[in-house]
Length: 164
Image 1 (cartoon, rainbow, N blue to C red):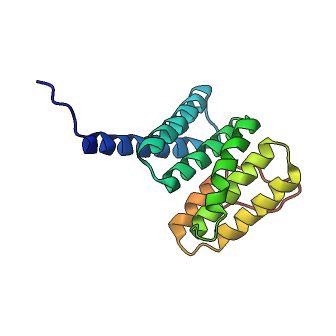
Image 2: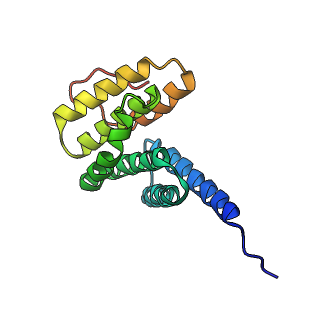
């Protein structure tokens, strides 16, 4: 006999899948080089995270998923899609209620999107703000997470800033 899973069980699995896809996409996004297959996996994982968070996540989960997609599309040099997803998440992470690490990560992703879009001034502004906010983080683990993202964001031209 096949028993239909409860709504709670389905939601638990959807959260698990959202988290797994999200984590895999971030791991791939932090690699300084990827194969074409890994680029494709990155894109699929980021979209899977967005899909499942749109079902079982709250507004914060959904904003984080949009941010992951913005970063993913910037990495894959698809600036239009990157800008679209960045626009969806920035209001959440630029708000004063956002955690310091969320603001730092938002600046790093915004720098990556600006770089992909060829917006040198915005790229430099967001990148330098990301470096500043990251350096101010007291929690070493939070700082390491943002630094891992910054390592894959191109430094602005003429910048002496370092992500690590």
